[in-house]
Image (cartoon, rainbow over all chains, first blue to last red; front, side, top):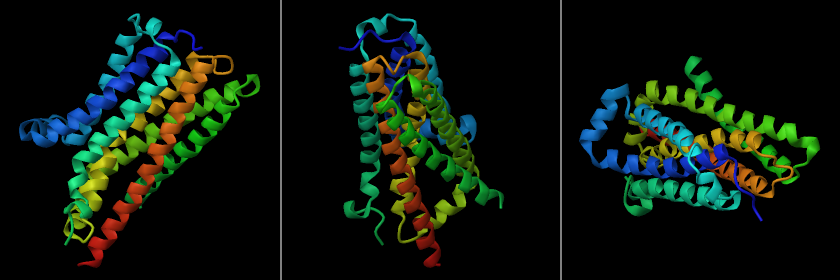
Length: 111
Length: 153
C-alpha cells in the first residue's frame, strides 16, 4: 500500500507528466505553423532555444503551482510512476511519429 | 579544439548521466540506511550531468551544427538529421526533466522505508537510462550521417 505523497514529489511529478505532453504538442504546432516557428526563432534566435525555455519554465512553474494544491492527498507514488511512464512514452512516441515519414523505409531521405 | 571539446563534453556528461542513473537504480533497488545518503548524491549527480549535457550540447547545436546539418541533408543519410536529430533534440527535454525530478524524489522522501517512493525513483532512473541510451545511439547515427555526407562530396 502506498502512502500519501510528499507535496513537491506530487507537484513536480504531475508537472513533469504535463510538460512531457506539452513538449510534444509544442513541437507538432510549431512544425505545422510557420508563424509560430518564425516567432520562436525571433524570440531567442533559435526555435529550439525558445522551445527549451518554454518547456523548462512551464515545468518549474507548474511544479510549484501543483505543489501548493491538494493534489498530493489524492495521489500515491505508484500511480505517479505509471503516469510518468505513460506520458514520457506517449510524448516521445508522438515526436518520433511526427518525423517517421523521413525514415528511408517510409519513403523519406532515400536517394 | 574548442568545438571538439564541446562535443566530447556533451557526450561525456550524457554517458555519465546514464552510468550514474544505473548506479542510482541499483542503490535504490537495495535502499537501506547505509546507502541513503549515496542515493541522494547519485540523484543529484544525474541531474547535474544531464543539465551540463543539455547546456553544452545546446550551445554546440545552436552555434555550430548548422553547417554540419547542411552536409548531412545533402548526403545519403539525410534522415540522420531529419529523423534522428529532430527527434533527439526534442525528446531530450523529457530525460532532462526526469533528471531534475530525481533529486526531488530522493531528497523529499524516505526511499528506505517508503516502498512507493522507492518504486517511483526506480521508474525515474529506468526512464533516464532508456532515454539516455536512445540519445547516445541517435548521436552515433547523426555522426555517421555526417560521414556519409562528406563521402559523397
